[in-house]
Image (tube, rainbow, N blue to C red; front, side):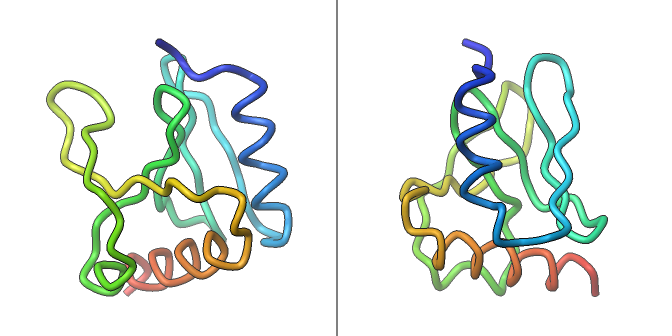
Length: 97
C-alpha cells in the first residue's frame, strides 16, 4: 500500500511548527528533510525516522520501510506535536554531525 495524499498532508500539518521541513516524493512514498537533512520518510502511511544513538531513548518501535532497507524507528503518536518536533530535531542534529 502506498502512502495516501491525505496521510502525507496530515503529517506535514503536524510538522508545520518546524519551519524548514521539506517533503520529496520517491516511488509512491515521501522523504522528509529538516533543514536540508534527510531524517526519515513516510512509507505505507507510517512515519519512519533513521535510527541514531541520540534518538534511542524515545523507545520507538523498529519497522522496515520496504524490503531490503535498513530498519527505522516508527513514530506512532503523531498527535503529540511536541514529541514529534523533539524527535525530528534530535535525529536531524545527530545526522548533521
